[in-house]
Structure formats: structure tokens, C-alpha cells
Image (cartoon, rainbow, N blue to C red; front, side, top):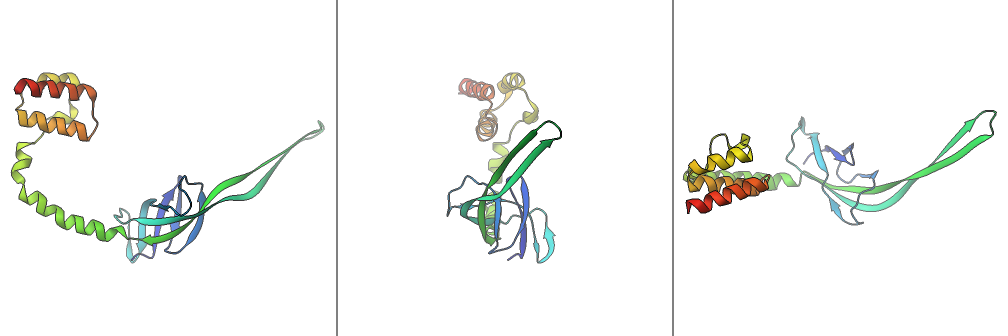
Length: 180
């Protein structure tokens, strides 16, 4: 599919190709597990894609210790000498595939317009009231008395799927009980 991708792992960016092995900062995944890092760019076949919908799949080959780094401190004429060091904890990964998720996304996008075209009435019935996104819980409690039960149910569904503000959930549930 693509010849290279730029991924982000552990706050660092890496340019990778399929089949490539690289050392990254220690990951919490076990050996043999697959990881899907965040894809920042996919390129190689013409213009690079800055907003890729593809996925990169990497397999954890093993966990290793990096090369030992020695640090020596010295202050003249005082006899102060201090030696320390460390070894970084690293994970070796192998890039298995780049762009495997592109086909899945394409299939979903072709199926999505059929669903939205089939139910345009449902969207108009369950539309959120105007200005709902910017309402505070106190404003929402006062305004809910003037809404229809469909609008209250749509707002309740929106709260459960998104932020789930406790006060808003309680206010909408009580307003729905009063309507019924």
C-alpha cells in the first residue's frame, strides 16, 4: 500500500516501513502482542496524506535494556568525585503492516450513506434543542419544561453518549418523568 508512515509512540516520532524493526521507549504491552500506534502521516505513493485514515500494526518482539550511560561529576580541589549511570528500558517492535485499515474504513464509508438516507425523518424528530451545547445545567433545567418529550430524550441520549454531566442527566430524567 504505502511505502512509509510517520508514527508517534511514547511522545516521539518515527519514520517506519513494513518489515522494519526499531527500538522505542518501553511499552506496557507483552512480548508477541500487537500495537497500533497513532499515525501522523502516510506517504510514498504521490502526495503525502497528513490526515490518514490508515492504521499501522506493530508487533512487540521483546523488551531490552539500552546501552549503559556513565556519568562522572568532579569538582576541583575538594576531593569530590561522583559516578552514576543508567540503562534505558526499551522495547523492540516490528512493523507488520501499513495501511491495513484503509479497506475497512472504505467499506464503512460506503455503507454509512445508506443508513443516513434511509432515516431522514428520525433526525428531525430527535434533534437537540437550539443552543443546547452552550447551556449550563441551571439553564437546561429551566428550558426543559418547554421541550417536547422527543427533544428531552434526544438530549438525554446526547448526555449519556458524551460528557455525561450528572446534574444534566438528573434534570433531563425528571423533566421526562413530568412529561409522561
